[in-house]
Length: 254
Image (cartoon, rainbow, N blue to C red; front, side, top):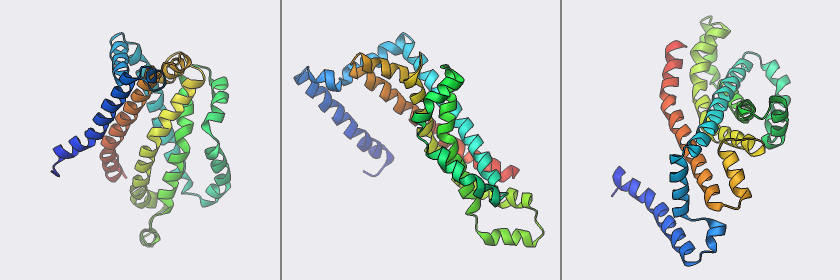
């Protein structure tokens, strides 16, 4: 009963029961479809719009925006966060500005970014990047600054330079924090791309959901939400696969 096969069955069972209950309720009262949609209608939307290619295009557009913003935000934030370790004075000076910018709601800044960078894909990538960069920055700096001081003193006692200390101690120790930022930023990257599409777009899942909500088509809205969840699961899967590679890369080359 504790085998992985049974665990997967137990995990799927609540979802299957919920879908059956949902479909049963809307069949008993057709008016409920207007408010809650229908699992069968959602499935038909997903099937038909995938076959005609429109849903696939929307998914690819949002995935490209979110994944590109995710990569840029994490890369930029990690580089800045680790760089601040070299100068505590610089971090103390920059800290209030970083906190202020990181605390600003991305939804409030998104219209500005769209005005500055246009209504195309680039502005959505910038929004996704800003949604992730500060989390990566703080995680990288925290990982670097939380290293046990005895290891730093040990390396310094052997005449190790600041750069050698960074390569041999800081970078390998901070990688755990950096990877945890990746997992946190999956949702933020998708949210950033979605917000950008929701404000101004002609393609993407955000545009699909906005159009469907304007038509009061709840089943189509939920189809878009389902695809956003699938996108988050896909990005999480890719992040989990890259964890071991990234750790091995740091250990090997640093």
